Length: 609
Image 1 (tube, rainbow, N blue to C red):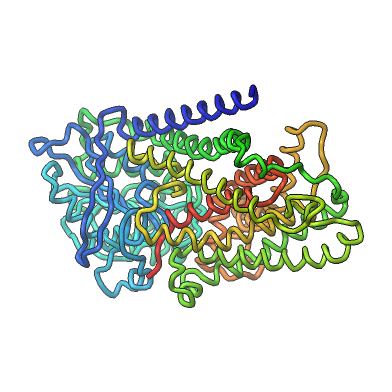
Image 2: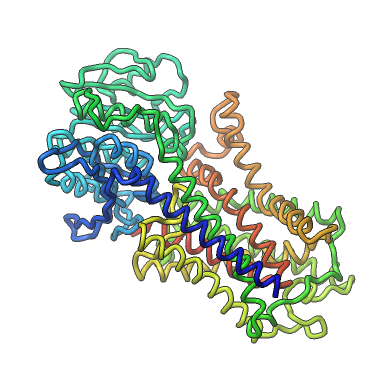
């Protein structure tokens, strides 16, 4: 009973922390009452719904119109990934509309990427609909509209600007220049370590005289970074802001946000510093992102006390079994098997991911698999599970049998004397996993319903399914993820390379987790280091092309995503390890972690045609 009371107290504490974090995120997003953030629904010319968030300074009224800024996100992101710009612009007296592009977030439709990039028509992924809506709001100064966008959103921003010559300012971030003539007051924010859009764009902090690059800016003479040219009143102002960061993280930098808000002041407010003006570097958006991250992490950590409470009930208690102790891998065997597993994951990663992006071969063969980035991961999960499963069976039928190792020792069966599956206990485990997922989904749903706050760190993670289609996709992507975590994250980690016990349960948990991170992530970390370390050290450009791999956007995209996947997997591996040590079986951890991963991609990923 004392242990149960402790778990109840911990669960209540987790809920309190989550609520506090969500409330703080809500307050910061609204600059503590100075901004109103309203959800909006638009309909584009094809009849497809577009979701948006309108950031409205309370001082903006039909009698006191304020400049407007359209804020566009990049591929595989959503409107909230750009909230650094939305918050900081709105608190300085700009009405900001951030939209989910078609096929993203809460918007309908799909991402017709080939059509968008071809430039053959006015297809802007819904961005032009957003511009026209913003311009016609009664509290927006229609004569002073700016457009910003990150990555693919920067391309959309330029297309919208070309379609609307009445725009007054344009700021693509980490994007390519299309060379469209007549764009007004153009600020290009460039990342020093830019994974994409590199052709014709130098990456040093020195003077540039690249004729193609300068021509696309609408200039003729050599330029320097962070220097303004032209005339704002004539719409000819030009500037290239150089930020010492990579593509993915540029919207999180103080400098990039400061450059944007200052450019909009100079372009849309005639350079005036009115009563709402705040110095550009005085920013609060990172605090919102921090509280979002706290809510995200603590929601997952709340599974620990909740699981403990549920496992004390008569119904779920039979799920718990002791951690098998008959078989422990030798130190030498552990390091050999773990290293081989890690390297296999790295060797399979790029061939099985970049081959399906952007021409998505899986989507062509299996059109119901609609989440673009998730398809590469799904193929990687399946391939890893197959390779690991074959190697495991070879080992199990030879070395393991000789040592008297059984399926009970592998964390599969529930009774040592009967190595067959107990389907009743498997069913209870599945039900328990469903309860745990429902708990997290409801927590996030309450936050979204009451405060409009998702649980995330910048990029989409925990959010509600915006359509029945996305809910259906959750079940599809659950299958390969579950196979991976049952085999690689179950039979292998807790069976074939079963670790020894340490002096205390806590030390054992953390040592197992750290070594599991090595076995699962060392190869992916090595891949990331080979790509980025020479670049960051100034020795060369991206490292993988120097090793013979194509210098393609697809490879860049996937190695870039390792910056998100590696820390995500490291945290999930902690939960996976805890679940195994709590139940002695591989099922609950595999089901819970794969449910989380399927949720992240199905609810937040971009939908292909």
